[in-house]
Length: 309
Ligand SMILES: [Mg+2]
Image (cartoon, rainbow, N blue to C red; front, side, top):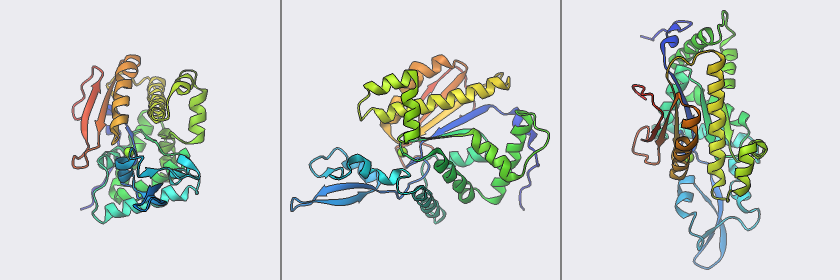
């Protein structure tokens, strides 16, 4: 029998505050987006080739056989990872990845955590090295909701969203489902850290502008992820403070399949975030091992201990 959910779930007021930050590629979904490179064939001639993100990770330091395109350089190499060829590319790739999951292929290790986050109506951020506009990422999340959540799970999500609106925002009446979903997704954050708008915002920040000036090509994406994470944590902090809701435990989880990012974000949390936001517990998940569901918990910082986090 179909499970019924109350129109407004008042139970959300008893919950702890848990939020998540997700990397997208190979963390939520294995995307078919290809990196454009040149490979030196046995005859010594460099020819154009397209690599998956997983293959690229294996050959990116093999300068003898692989290089970025002579014409266009790294910008050309990652042209499919931005909106340069139109925002439709990311959406199409997201649909293709979700359809594979529908046909039984294993999704990324954090796929189910994103599903649960949406079902429970919790705030989250997508932080990716891609270069899309925030609206493009938000659109992909809407597609995710349509494909990955069943009708009953979407109903559960709406019931929870109204619960939060009533409890946190003191809402007495509600908009249509579409309006309430817009409101929720508008409270979440979508940061593609190689997007021009994002980079401009970072360059204008007094602290990160300076850090960026001294960063190398290799450390820039990690620095940009830090900036995006700080932005989301501040957003959550201000939202909770505004609503006087800081009386209970707050936890923020971060998951990424890139070991370099996991390491730098863990260090950043320990050195800065956990000191600045004392009441918040931070948990980092390394999802580089595809055989592990949810990945491996690698860093826990903060004094609070929430069951089941
Ligand atoms: Mg990734």
